[in-house]
Image (cartoon, rainbow, N blue to C red; front, top):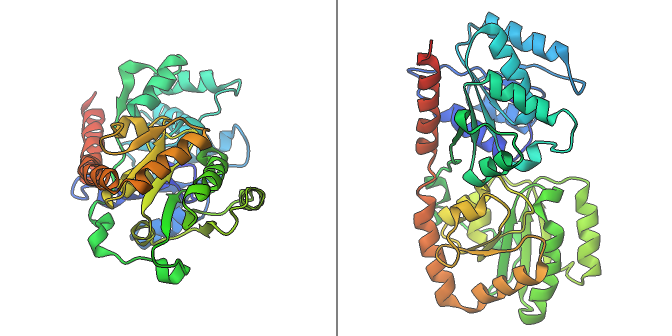
Length: 363
């Protein structure tokens, strides 16, 4: 099992959930990482010691050699790679070692579509791997439209969440810790501070919402990046610096969700959106942009609302609609809880283990 990122994020969380719930009577996972970080530490907590296979350049022959050596030394039967670039190396290493490779693509942003060699890399993947897994049908359709993906070796396996962990009855709110007054409306988002998350759109929407709902706080929980300064300056310019709070990385996401009244995803692109399903599992009404994965999970008006990406006015309108219509909010939240049950970790793990069995049974 190998992934190219060791930081926080949806792909890394799925990777961690997968290795943690494999049937150990049948599968013994070895974990390969390119660097230390949050994921490295979390893997160690689960009793595994990751093998570090660092890389230092855009095409690293040494990385390929190290992967081949690792596969042979550990007598690996199958490789499962996550994210695009490392999957190319894994595909070549698996082909040269004569073992099957399964690769998972987690989002559009994982692939540099304008890079000159991207088409060549996809061609190598399509030729060398047993299956390429996409975490949602819209993500697969995107790469089919670009003529990168090959449907004959493609499959869709939705991400899974720990439904019990996000049972709103089992966790407490952070309102007292964060100093949020009683009766304040809290709009929340979870995700690292990255351009694809569209937090600038969320801040502009906050300035519109505040004109109708003065007692409102927007909170964003996610690992900080240099973007935070730009976002804070934008909030100041929009007059909502007191209404928008960045919490940084939080390991207690169930408690963060318990604090929120309405969950908002303002992303420009999402392969699936694990955090949206987590919010749905926590019993929250959700409002998401039509950015790929969410419109595959959500049925508009039934278990959530969908708005156009990059449109702060449309986002603000949807927030105000849910905030002022308690019946609508309750109906969306109840339906969202039911929808979330389709995306469990056991279901995801079994789908992947089915692919492992299929790959290992082929001559």
